[in-house]
Length: 401
Image (tube, rainbow, N blue to C red):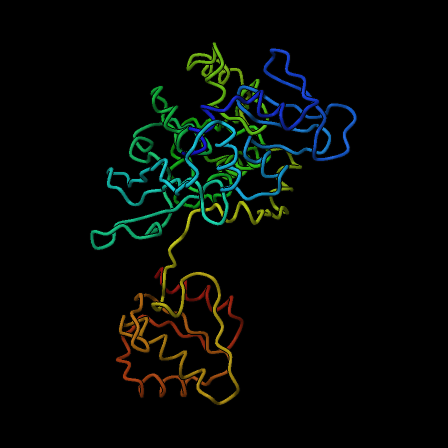
């Protein structure tokens, strides 16, 4: 029994009333009562008895039925799921993780690159988690298997308009209305890659529809800043009437909120322009992620420069006492990456190597590479002495010529 099935059977008003006796349920959607999470004397707790979402206007406690029960009783999510399920009259207590949704990420030609699965419940007491999988030797394995791409990419590249939301289900909703919609693949915590910006920059109009919460608005701002000045018309449209954490899926459930109403709202929204404060804030901001949110991010597959030994990206350091072979190891690594040969018996990803020799003589480097069997035509660019930044700039200029 998953949480949606439990919610479909749960009498929300009765559930909250049994846990918050002061709650006043009077036939309206919103019910008010004393918040159990702080010493409340002013009925600060608001509960939506249709959606099950709650929020305290004093201590800012908020969430859904299961979050409420967890916070109130101190149990983990699986226990909350079981006990709220029993409250709803279900008898099934052995809740197994189930894939409740699967989203395909494709290249511009419609070939599936990887899938993203939503699993409920997640591991270690989490309510949900997401994992990426890709095909490798006809088997599904964890990870994207490559760089992230935009959702519904084949449709997007054929259009001059793009609607950007936070999540695949929302993009699917807009697509069902005939609107070209997309999202980044890791929710509000997604980084927007250069390749994604390049595709979106080809659009004449981009409309961003943020979720009504702080992460959602931050997500919208991040994308808007990245696209500002690159598309002809950019708008960020905040949907009216949303409660905290609600989104366009909640918005369309309200009578009168249709595709035509959405288009009307978009037309009435001014083009997005960052303020000076927003520009400065974007430059100086440090983005923090809660550990609980980090745990819900999809698993990523590590890409290796040297299989199982040296990952791509980042910064790796070899540390040892003097005269034990660090330089010899570095030159061997450089040569094997340039040639694509095994290094210490491990597969390597062949590529161009920049070798900064800031403490060695040219004659020594020449002799050492010759002794290692280098032919001299390997893609190894060597810089002896000077500042590393100058070295890299010279190598870039050389490669352009």
